[in-house]
Length: 294
Image: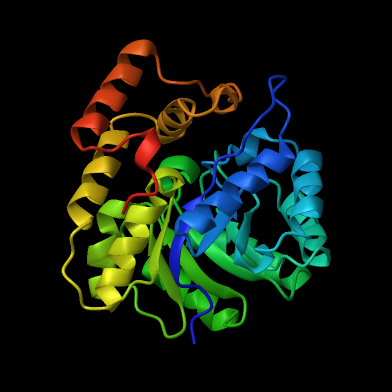
């Protein structure tokens, strides 16, 4: 039986005016996404500015999150290049009851499958009770998982390597492993992925498309006519014209100025791009006031 299935948001992190992490608001945002339709939420992925947020702030959030009513619905991203820091962060997470992780190989350095297998092997050897979703995003890490690499990792660690988020899209159509979850990283691939046997999505834009994504997911399994998929895909396509983090924060800041806070080297959309984003979304009857509509 697969450990992970459904619609997952790669949650934004919410910051104070001094750019420190607002723990309560970040957690509340995650709760809201679940109430809007997400099966779960991934904190501290790339959308959550993980590589820009201090480890101490992450740990403070985990301490607060450990008391949360949706605790079992959360996946923790590590967002750390350092193997040792990754292991230490995971060990702390496990002591707080979080065993589910989204982990991308380190960025910047050049390497291949052999080195990736070694990287994850070192993690599992030190954090034996972890459950890992691999993060395949060549654009960010510079590395693209091969099917054979994932097959080898699952063979070595069948109790630990349990899924992959495929944001490079070289896997989701062809990767078939028993009891292994495959999540495309875009709403554009949700319906096709489900038809191919994938297990849902983990995406940045589920910060705003939770209800629509959940409807597409539920209608698929209920064999109902798809009435929301076109709109869902069109909304995603609008956001893909821009940096996703910038676009999501710009969109959500219409509701609350706190979303305007974003860590350098990221930024909000400039006025021209903001107007294009909002105008294009309005043409789809998608705005900040109807996020609950599916």
